[in-house]
Amino acid sequence: MKSREKVMEDHLKTITEDSSFLPRFWEKVDKRDNEECWPWLGQKKKNGDDNAAPIMVSSRKAGKRKFIRARRIALWLETGEWPEQNVNAVCKCRNADCVNPRHLFWGSGGSGKGFFTDCEKEKIKTEIMMSHNMSIVARKYGLSPAFVSMVSRGVAWKEINIFDTEGNVI
Image (cartoon, rainbow, N blue to C red; front, side):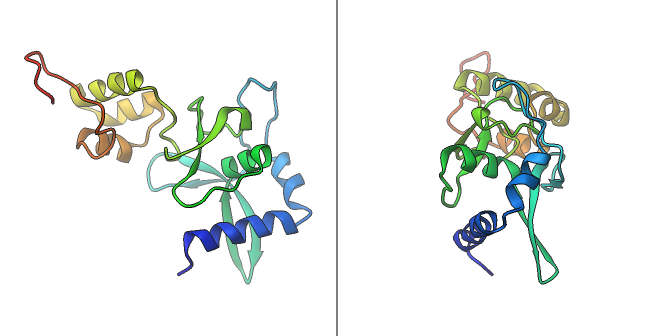
């Protein structure tokens, strides 16, 4: 199996060597005003949860298709950076289809988790802990049900403490 670094290197090589790639990429973006979201109109790939990541088919070598997340391409075009392992193109606006590079930044948040302030995380985590239906909370905030489950089990957002009425950490 290829290392993630090798896969990323192959993706970047494909993008830069295929002259039809960038025109095909921009055909799949509904470019609007610079401050608005730019919805991805192309293919999406399920992540194993209810969210679908905007993706671009980069090539079809030997009958196998390579996929690159559309947000990574958009942010790479804006910044010229292609980051290493465990760094994703995270969207500030929390719109799952947005590929506007002005809404993106390189970060450790996963696709679909978006960027939240600690105050927002506290509010969301409180709702998760109080809710009997986590999928409703997931939909409300654009999170995957798997990620909401991780928050409820204390695997994600460990740094955010929620207290009960007696001041005990929940």
